[in-house]
Structures are given as C-alpha cells and as structure tokens.
Image (cartoon, rainbow, N blue to C red; front, side):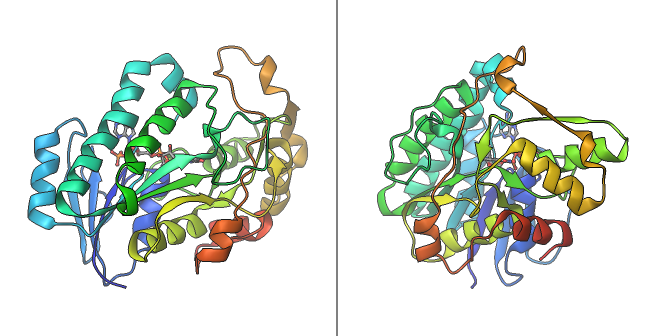
Length: 296
Ligand SMILES: NC(=O)c1ccc[n+]([C@@H]2O[C@H](COP(=O)([O-])OP(=O)(O)OC[C@H]3O[C@@H](n4cnc5c(N)ncnc54)[C@H](OP(=O)(O)O)[C@@H]3O)[C@@H](O)[C@H]2O)c1
C-alpha cells in the first residue's frame, strides 16, 4: 500500500492511532490545531484552524492527497449539547469544507461517524437502517453523513462503535484511559448498565479506516466489535484484565444522571458488512481489549 493520506484530528485518540497503524511507505499529512508532537519519516504535520478554508485549500493544492480520513470532531456529547454553534461548525462546517476540497481534487473521503446516530430502540442496526439521533452531537453527525454521501463513490461513511484503547497523545476521548487513571487513584467509576454498545478496539478500527481509504470501498460501513455489552460489564472485564478490584466499578442508571445529554439505550451495530468485505478482522471485546492494551 502506498499513496498519500490526509488525516484530520491527527492528535486525537483515533487520529493518532490511525497514524501509528499506517504503512511507513505511505505519505501521511496530519492536520491538527496544535503543532505535531510525534515525528517519523513520511509524516508531515500541518497546524491549521479548521475554519480556515483557504489554508486547507492550500494544503490540498500543494500535497494532493489520494484520500482523507476525517477523524476530527467535537466528540464529547455533553459539550456538543451545551455549545451547539461550536459543535455545528466543528462537526458539520469542517466536514463540508473537506468534502468540497475532496470533490475539487478527486480525493476519497472516509468520514468517522458514530453508532449514536441511532435512537437505541431497534438494535442491532444494519447500514441500511435510518438514523434517528436523540442528541445534538448525533444530529451533527447525521448532517455530516449527508454531506459525505453526496460524494457518491468517493465517499465512505464509517460508523464507529464505542472505541476502546489508549490515546498516543494526551488523553483524547478514550474512556479506557480515564477509567485506568481512576483505578490507579483508587477512585470508583460509575458505569451505566442501561447503555449497550458493540465496542471496537482502536487498533482494529485504525486498520479498517486505512483499508477503507486505500482499497476500493464505498458507502456505509459499521466498524464495531462482535460483542454487545453494557458499560458496567465492560468496566468489570477491564478491571479484571488489569488486575484492579472490580468493586471499583459501580453500576448506575445514566438516565437518572443530571446535566447529561440523552444517550441511546442500545446502539449495537451489526458488523456483518465489514466482516464480509474488509480484510481487517473484526474482534470480540476481550480480544480487542488485549490488542489495544498490548499494541499491534
Ligand atoms: N472515541 C469514541 O468512542 C468514538 C465513537 C464513535 C465515533 N467517534 C468519532 O471518531 C472521531 C475521532 O474521535 P476521538 O475519539 O479520536 O476524539 P478525540 O480524541 O476528541 O479527537 C478528536 C480530534 O478532533 C479535533 N477537534 C476537537 N475539537 C475540534 C473542533 N472544535 N474543531 C475541529 N477539530 C476539533 C482534535 O484534533 P487536533 O487536536 O489534532 O486538532 C481532537 O483531538 C470523531 O469524529 C468522533 O466523533 C469516536
């Protein structure tokens, strides 16, 4: 595999792992709002304000990427609910700018969407099921999916399940990193029993995103693990695996938590399409957790 891939949100949890899993022969253009902190041959950092369409245009003109993996987003559900104009600009405006540039330059665009585009009442969800978002973050993702769909065969919508793994720069949006920090400090972690997901490990996810960007795939893909679990069950397995006391994981009902945007109940994704069409194998939770903890 070779070619030029542009990765947005490059210092985020998913973006940094995509860079780490990418082929060293591939030319990577990493877009971030901050100067790059990880360096290697073939990796080029571009510090850019996502709202600066002219600066983004210059990067496309100069480097002509074959594909874009768009991982940047305001990804915190509660922040999106509280700061809707910012979320709209980060999640929809930036996607529109990138889609315009991909169209103009003939580049493929792989967009990181989310399992939470669904309402959580009709799991397991197939790619053909209609999104019914119940919070503002998910609404921005559905709007952005519509923009990417307009790219036709040059657009890929990857709906990510909850991602398990460790960020390579900072903490990022990794609930595993936050959970480990709490366990190490002896702090209990409240984990909802009423939120079911099909978690995917970040290494499998990164490999699948690269495959979608570099091979001949188009349309919608659900990138999820093979197992449906609630967050309390996940917490207990993680505590066991890392040798912490599972009493540190406290069950809770998230619908009773105050100041929290609504979450869908069960957004288990069917990954049958990914399993049938991608070379990257999708994994069960414990298998994926082991890969994420020990690297790949
Ligand atoms: N983590 C999950 O469980 C999960 C599940 C489903 C879907 N997703 C989606 O997967 C993608 C990657 O998520 P992640 O977990 O890697 O999140 P993350 O760690 O928060 O990384 C997202 C990155 O996006 C960039 N970003 C943040 N706020 C921004 C803003 N206001 N405007 C423009 N860029 C901004 C930042 O990159 P720089 O600092 O490099 O600029 C940030 O590091 C997102 O699209 C997210 O919605 C994640």
